[in-house]
Length: 305
Image (spheres, one colour):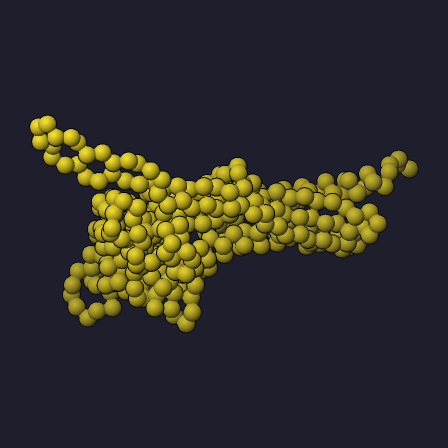
């Protein structure tokens, strides 16, 4: 007869489940959110993202005249706070013992990691969905028509209008040409990404890839994507309601472009056996936050209506 203690059995069983969780966590999984956000590691609970003021243009200096000086200072400040996101799962010893075909063991980790990822996918997509009604550091909505500048009386607009059509897309692309820095000088930015709901993919491909202008009875050559070409990123969590869906242009060459995903601690798992009830408990945790920095510079969006 083998020698051993009862808690050894629980420990060995827990080690087996731990192996299953770790194996599942390392499995490749399609992730959409990295395509539409900038991931930043931040050790502190609250990350601070500052924008700087800008310099006005230089002037001709006459002999004996003083040169003009500008003082650089802090512009608008955005703070992002990380939170703990958690989900637990529990099951009885009996469920595991009678799992003759390994259905529970094969799927318990996958189900847990899946919902953790979906939570993050929804949060990042909702940062775009809600950008038309969420206040930003400059006091306007994150996507709005009148973003004030720190060192100029002018304003920036990153609010496009209408559904995704050829004319509306061209107008939104041209809005990047009018974007100014904090001193009112034209800013060097061009759109690189078109973010849409999955159900708008066919319309986007017709607009961007047809040889002739889409949705028109003409022989006009389609040049929408010939200048400053953009690539399409579709996401099923971008809002879609009876054909109406917001769409966004992003310059992902700029620092902190789009939505910021601030990571304090990547996903980890804690597991335990409850001896009295012989119940297994597993918890999955992540620490992160998200937000939008520098409104009016890097995103142009339309509600689609």
